[in-house]
Length: 125
Image 1: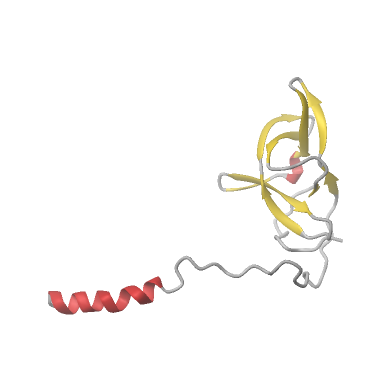
Image 2 (image 1 turned 180 degrees about the vertical axis):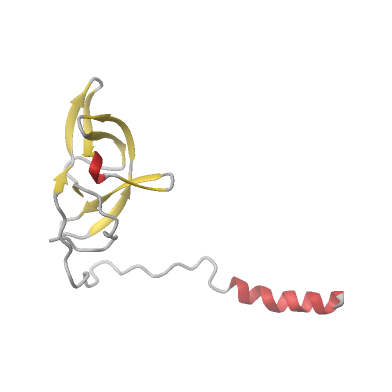
């Protein structure tokens, strides 16, 4: 195969390879229909201030926290009961809880115990 056919082959191949690059699966629009079957969770806990040696801090149960690669997260439950992943930064452990450095606000609600079958967008009972 000579240089010219090779270049033509590459020119023909590249657009086909790039088709779809950078595209994401569309996410459901806000207000779209919830998942048809609500999922039961063991508990939903409210993020509250606790205290430690450094003063008032936000805390979350250790069981609520999960990791995906280098990321640490929890499932937040909104007012309509829909689950969304939230990436957080945590500090030290204290009495079965973790100090939350960033990513959550006081009063938000999280699934109290992580379960791998839960997914973003699911509705909790």
